Length: 82
Image: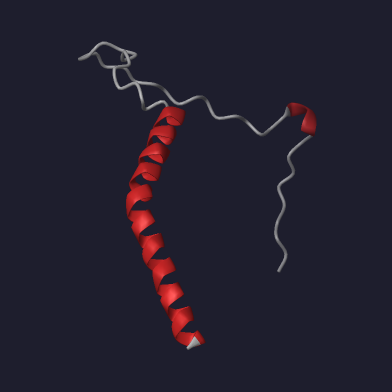
């Protein structure tokens, strides 16, 4: 008898969780999406573009940083001995 009572209570709890999930999950997801879009700045779709429409603008790559410092010393080439 206790086993049947346990199964009935378990079934009712899972059924209620599923029912609440169907009701509350859409609201939680809408809130989460709205919050994430506000954080990323996508909430303002009418931002002015940086350049007028039709103009061509090419951003160049920054020059690569050189790792060689003249104060480091002279470069000595070596041969690998196997």
